[in-house]
Image 1: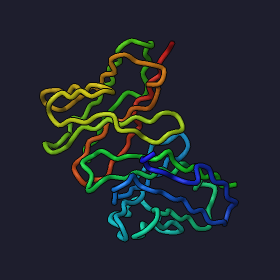
Image 2: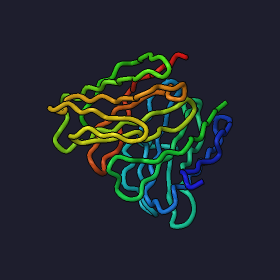
Image 3: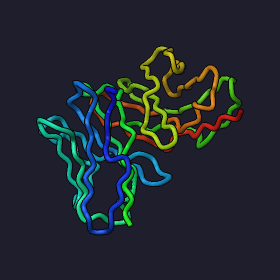
Image 4: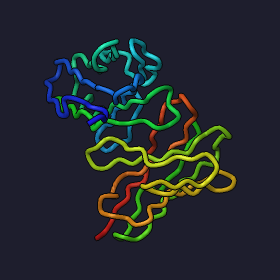
Length: 114
Length: 109
């Protein structure tokens, strides 16, 4: 399967713990995007990364959230000291280059904070 | 990015055509019209896109008004698997996709 792979698919954390979500883009894609979808809401852009660079993090909360896309390995979205409001589905998408609108999305990681 | 307006929900019978409308009266000349859909518990899936001319692919057709202020996604024969939220999005190359509320399509057997 050459699609966008996200793991874990489901993650449960207690308040104050850390959550790490991983995204492997489609083969050959070097641009990665993270979106968040709160229950019964639409998708909100969080961050856009190329290999080793954050291009646009305008949608990322200023505290507790960080993202990276190292030269080797998957992109990681890290949430420190999670709170109940972080419970959501986190989707990763990738594109070959600067996209012209067609993004390929993964199936998402669903975070539940107890 | 320019704003789009879609009905909150629509209903269709299985194996009948479905026309999903989208208004985008403030569209700019360089905005592409993209449609994505999101099936339950899945990530969004690209459906189709166009600039000025009508477009067809294996999934759907896109009809774009001559003045580009509206467009219609056409599913020629709805199946139960087409039940999803359909998003109409305007995008310039390199800008981030902004998802609105979309249209929830329900397909009745």
